[in-house]
Image 1 (tube, helix red, strand yellow):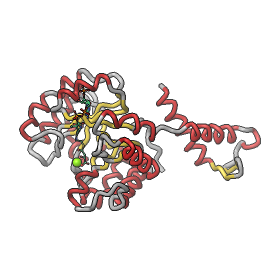
Image 2 (tube, helix red, strand yellow; image 1 turned 90 degrees about the horizontal axis):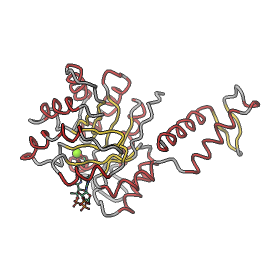
Image 3 (tube, protein in one colour; image 1 turned 60 degrees about the vertical axis):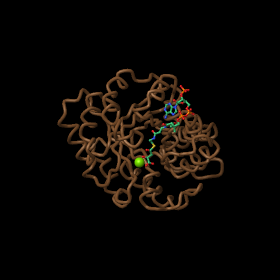
Image 4 (cartoon, rainbow, N blue to C red; image 1 turned 180 degrees about the vertical axis):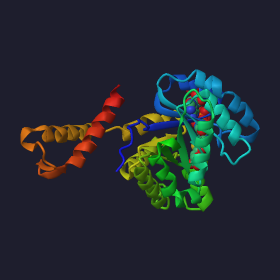
Length: 293
Ligand SMILES: CC(C)(COP(=O)(O)OP(=O)(O)OC[C@H]1O[C@@H](n2cnc3c(N)ncnc32)[C@H](O)[C@@H]1OP(=O)(O)O)[C@@H](O)C(=O)NCCC(=O)NCCSC(=O)C[C@H](O)C(=O)O
Ligand SMILES: [Mg+2]
């Protein structure tokens, strides 16, 4: 199994490139990543003006955000190619491709990155938000095994998926669940991060906390967000708990005991612990160290 690099992508906030008030707010916000959106949050009449703002936004990137990502319009749309060209010159950490349906959609963007003389090649993130994308998820995620694809992260686009399939959006997300679990499985097979879709009711933070808890249990690495109030609950949910950290430390310490040297499986507090659990514990501790930095 591929062990992907550890990124902190617990809280990933969309900010419409057309919303000056929200852009101004960014300087006072702290979250793991922001996605400057040129796609669904920007009306067709505002697309060109929003794109023209990218250089200013990236040139003045918020200090307490680890990754700044630009979501372009689909390359098949009338705006996509210009968006990608503009994004590349601004050197974001990542470019989020919407409406990806096949591996070819990712490779097309990767080729354009390679052909550019970009100061630094951004990573690619891909939205999984159409029925075709869900059906092709294994092949799309497989690109994560090829560094040349630059694919680093999958993002569930639950609003589009609900709209395109007609499934009922229930609070427990029961009809989306099979597709979301396919996304998690595929992301793991490809060594990619996987982020949950947005929760639209941005005033209902209890519902958001429940969605985050569910997403964590399903294996997601973080949550995409639409409002600053959603950052704290998402970070609380996707950060290792004190209990999990204490347990990870116990596992690492147990394997370090002289009597356990060279063993693949040991007993700890009445349960079997294997080397795979030590690897998992070490990853959790490394993540906590990144959060503490
Ligand atoms: C939904 C909103 C339009 C609500 O905005 P607003 O009415 O201004 O809310 P508030 O008055 O409560 O805002 C309080 C302050 O916070 C700032 N703010 C709000 N949202 C953001 C944000 N996303 N980033 C940064 N700052 C933000 C306000 O400006 C207020 O600031 P101040 O007055 O100075 O204190 C709005 O939240 C919004 O536009 N959200 C993002 C919408 C978006 O990006 N949508 C597209 C992404 S989701 C998607 O596409 C899903 C996916 O593709 C799928 O298919 O599922
Ligand atoms: Mg969408």
